[in-house]
Figure 1: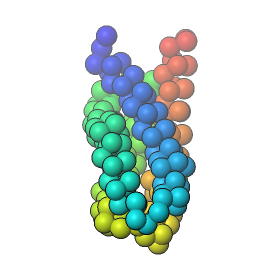
Figure 2: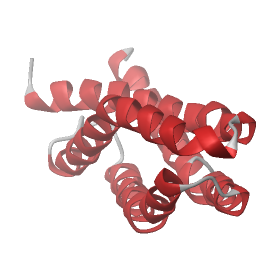
Figure 3: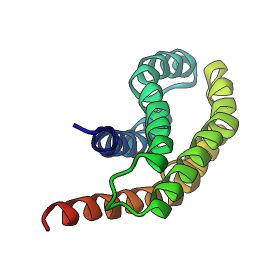
Length: 153
């Protein structure tokens, strides 16, 4: 199998995995914090975060690397501009997660704050799992369609 085919398949698998993880964090993980008491919140937040990160962060980093490699080694049926758009959105999302989300999570490790949780949910809806992720996922679906339709010719 050629490198471009391996990268293409890896990209699609990782993109679906990351999108699903982002949606789950928004709809399940963040929303459930409202139910945790202030006394237990710090321990719950630290425990859950330390268990989620190994299953999410390495794959997100790998996704960004594979997406960047796809710019040069992509399947010929995929539009280069879609790959560049997806890569730019991935880099934007990672930068936002590091610069905006991480400091909030560090504060939540110390104590429960509904203001911080609400802010995190708001930012996540708009930045993390919101519009950039949706555009990125639409670009990914179009790329997949391009590969499938080229393969069926």
